[in-house]
Length: 274
Image 1: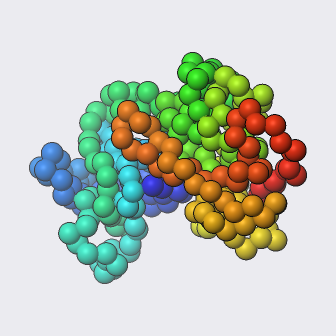
Image 2 (image 1 turned 90 degrees about the vertical axis):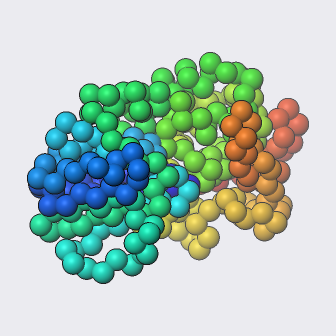
């Protein structure tokens, strides 16, 4: 699933191509919006909120979520799409650009004044203007018995963090995914690392959490069975997702650099990230 930095870049692209221009075409290819026509209305702004994308047109908000496979592409008028038409869920065009939403996991339109009902439950966004690490810490500590690997993925605590940043942040800070939040010696450092990693990658086309001298972009994510770059121990994986939603995902970690909670072990060298 695209993470906060991907959606941030998507919002910036759409903002640059749509905002301030009247729509010459709008085509919503989902049943609940099929009769809606925004042609002639100006796009006021485009913004991201974690993994959510908000396109504001007149007094309406086009709310999309990319889920697993979604994306937005931008073309010149009349340019042939590089994706089958049956995958397109939304088309918004002006005199200069045509934006198409492909395989969108969520597409709905509602009055902008009701945006808070759609995204108001989300925690602070590391890439947003209202970032507040202390609020994030307080939200996470409301469930002290929850493993940190689950807390970081809960969008109500902080939004925009997915499985990649969960795995990479916990490796860099040398914390096992199952460490209970209430036992964390320095929760603020983990929150700060999430912020730094997202900001380091918000302007990159290719996400990278490792130093420039390493060709592999990740320390542990999807490196199961391969040697850890710090200690050579094979990277492991474990199912770890929100059980109440039956959506377990794999968390990746190094069993030596990230010891099981409460197990005494010599502290390994710290990882660095760019």
